[in-house]
Image (cartoon, rainbow, N blue to C red; front, side, top):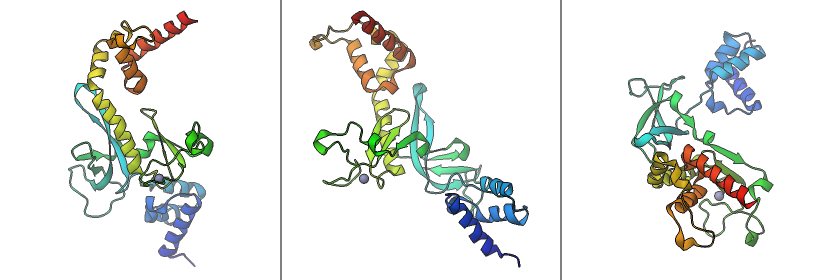
Length: 263
Ligand SMILES: [Zn+2]
């Protein structure tokens, strides 16, 4: 007795489930064909078929593109895939196993048609911590040390369950599981983009002249005498990921010297 195509599809979905894979991200017919119809059904054949027929990107997936803007700045923009395109920019008339490009419409850019090879899964830009003790480390005393979800909950937000770290900036936000969505994470990354845009002038100045950050500074306790270097330094303390490399190195050296003198 040979299994029908329908049975084999069901079997393949079941196997994928056992391997904790989402069947919808796979071309089931392709797997059935390569693993069991033309293939010999061995473990290796199955593995190769599963790998080959994985759909890395699907419509609705949130992705990140890197956009080059003027003055050598690059920006990360996020949006969901709206549909897939051929190399000539036209849409496909039916579902295809290996689309060439995706059409996305990020909030912060004009629409783009981007080859799949240039897309990054948005989740790749974040680290998600789930251990309760780490999520609530240093939590607010007035709330028994428990951080609350910063999603849209009104006056009674539930406790945070995850801590999301934006890898580029190192900034952290805490959400409940339901609010840990691609959309919230993308908004979080957008905040870093806004800081980058607002700091544009400062970045250009420090790129052109890194030594500005280690110019004369006010004596401790005499903040009314604050100098431009003080301002650059407090900006650098707030947005360390935006400091141009040469200025960052100069500032680190300056701090080390100050520590050595004090010691
Ligand atoms: Zn929430």
